[in-house]
View 1: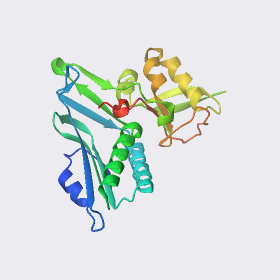
View 2: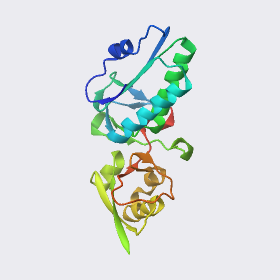
View 3: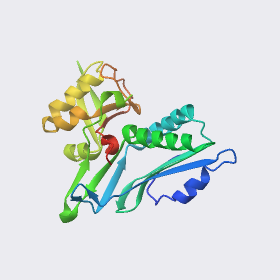
View 4: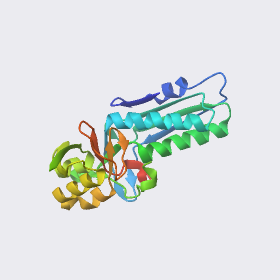
Length: 144
Length: 87
């Protein structure tokens, strides 16, 4: 299941939704808004997506993850709009028969999501300062 | 003979360019490289981010030599949030 949403992510529901009788392992990753990056204070983050491409890339990541690991079910949700410190911005839940595969598949899915899915965040700092986070480490070979 | 490509822009590029879509003049039968050159001519002050941005055609990352056809949906994709692996 792939979704972009402006509403809070119900990660307990998401975790339940991937449970399967044949899967003895469930791993859920949550990305949350951190208050500090180095010594820079973050008050909130604002997420923006190129939605049709983001959904397409997330679907491809799900297909790729299923091709590599024996996934029972998986779900990926990214939140958009303004999020306060501590809120969940992204959740990935994966079930597999055994735990090593669940950890590996979940790690793969969130790593690929962060490399390939066109979603950006604006860091809102104290004093009305803000800046878009555009890291420079996007190499050509990561773009597929 | 020249043509025009409408490009969707996001995040910092949207703020620099002042709109969520921009129209860029390009040569006839333009490629992704031609579009990139066109963007750099119009916004030389954004060259740093432009150089690190990808261009997507019809929701797929495009190669430099790919042709842009009439009716294609084109977007400028600045580096994404998590690309550094530290966030």
